[in-house]
Image (cartoon, rainbow, N blue to C red):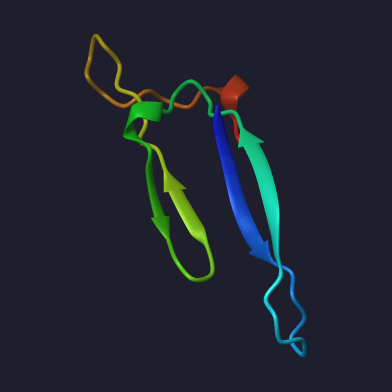
Length: 72
């Protein structure tokens, strides 16, 4: 599981002070992703989170995405 707790700017353009709202999102990563390889990059407009695919123990190749694990 991956839990993100970030602050989003909800202030209006005309108003002076900046108002932030805490946002919490929880995601469940499919089994093909390795949580140990998690890497995040922060920009002014977004946060990018990357996780590498797991490798098969027998062949050392990246695990394939199965039909039942199709992401929308």
